[in-house]
Image (cartoon, rainbow, N blue to C red; front, side):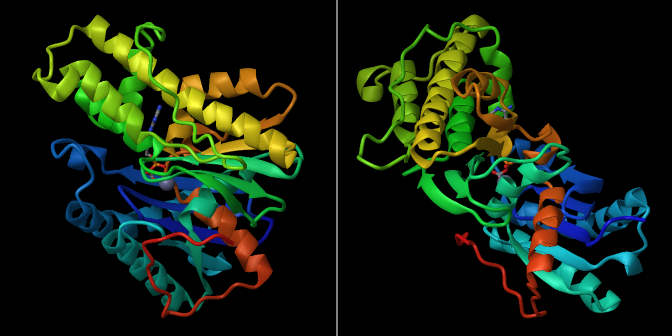
Length: 343
Ligand code: KG4
Ligand code: ZN
């Protein structure tokens, strides 16, 4: 007998179409993802129109596959959880339409889920040990870089943010400048493995204000541009050898990672957090994980499986279970919202 609730999760906020089934907010019975990376590569970034159309094609069969893989009949579901904020509105609307249709046809409750709160909640998936609270969670993705303080599961107070670019956005832009391809974060990490982290110096993006744990990455990005093109941007982009690229990649990644690790460590001490979790695509980064391990010795570290860091629907279904238990029930009027809201 599977523990309840059994929730179907649906995610389509950006360039991943995903469906998953999770039991009791913890056991991932299936986690189906279709990444649109190949569709957007030639454009060097996510094209909302292409993303929306692809979600429309891929989501319905993914939902079926998620149920089949989980060995769960649609009638056994307790609710349908769907990302309704934040994200590209056209993309959110596709996921919402699919979720509403499934909920209506099956006569099951519909639950709107906040994508960023779900990234925090992913730390609780497939976890056998008890999680110590309060938990500090770093969510670093292509669109957001924030710290959340979580005093109990399902609750997440944002305690810091990036004042400009997200960490993933900075890594993506740096990779594009270095000609490392798309998506930039993983390409930059691969190149950085061959480079010297001390070859170039970048000022860390720490905002020095009393009581603030905010970060900034746009200065670092501009600094890289000036290093490549000279003062006044008088030179064209240089032709770089693989070794030169690797040195820039390693130095830039180090600056981004150091900034994040420093803010996590200081905020952990400030809030007396007993555990630290990471989520979002940047949480896949090996150097970030390594440096957090070094800096946070003695703190419980919750580094989710890579599959639960980048966009996925297991995290939506997992948080869906918590919202279901809290009594949340949404109507078929549930709207897509481009922005997140703290809970
Ligand atoms: O959470 P996510 O999959 O989608 C958003 O909601 O944005 O995050 C995507 C971001 C991209 O900026 C991507 O370059 C970055 O995560 N990323 C990485 C790595 N894998 C993905 N950044 C650094 N190292 C990685 N291994
Ligand atoms: Zn995300």
